[in-house]
Amino acid sequence: MSHHRTARRSEHGDYQVRREKMVQGLADAGIKDRRVLAAMRALPRHVFLAEPLWPKAHHDVTLPIGFKQTMTQPLTTALMLEALALRENEKVLEIGTGSGYQTALLASLCAAVFSVERIAELAREAQGRIRELSIRNASIKHFDGTYGWSEFAPYDGIVVSATAPSVPAPLLEQLATGGRIVIPMSRNGLEQICVVTKTRGSLETVALALCSFVPLLGRYAYAEGDSEAGGARSGKRS
Image 1: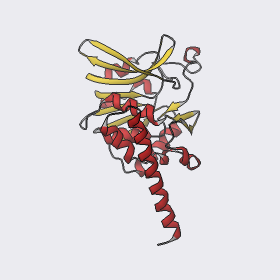
Image 2: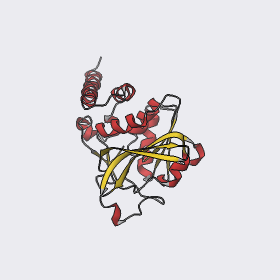
Image 3: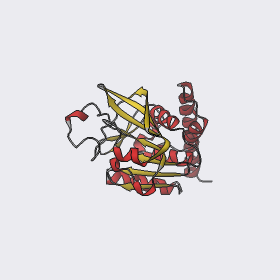
Image 4: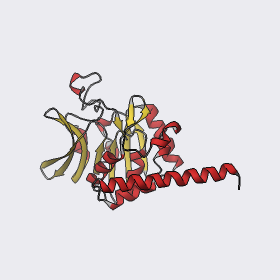
């Protein structure tokens, strides 16, 4: 066996150990969903980042992915996935593909994932990573995410990776009755991750945690340069 191959195997094992520590930290922080923890333990996180950032991939911090966007820290990702409470036979819509990391996690938690990304280059790069990992139940397209993806609606769950002033109307229309939307929203001057559940004739909204995401830009959210979106500037994406 060559020295290069041995080094590569050692490196792979090192990242696996780091993922184990990351997941243990998530459990210690209160994440209880075993399927979410198992998915994050199994999926290589570092491969969704530029190689110079690999040593930091498992720290609970945001990391840049280009285009003034970043990968969301692990705890926030885990919190949002846990709140979705997906079942294996369900279908989910993701608004904001980002690096594709959360897309890949979702693919391991449900039957099908449809993800929309407004930045063309990020969508292309994420598609490449999804292909390299042989994930076959995730589809990505470049478009204004506030329109959703009506072709495959209704969805059992929708997760949004940017802060909105309210839930975009098309997303509510594309959500199945009994479905959940996990979305950061700006409410009373605060950004909060919220879970919106659609029941027959009504919506129930529960705030989970404070957060700081980039603004959701698009026809049914903030316009580019909108001053009201100024509070959502951290660049957190998936």
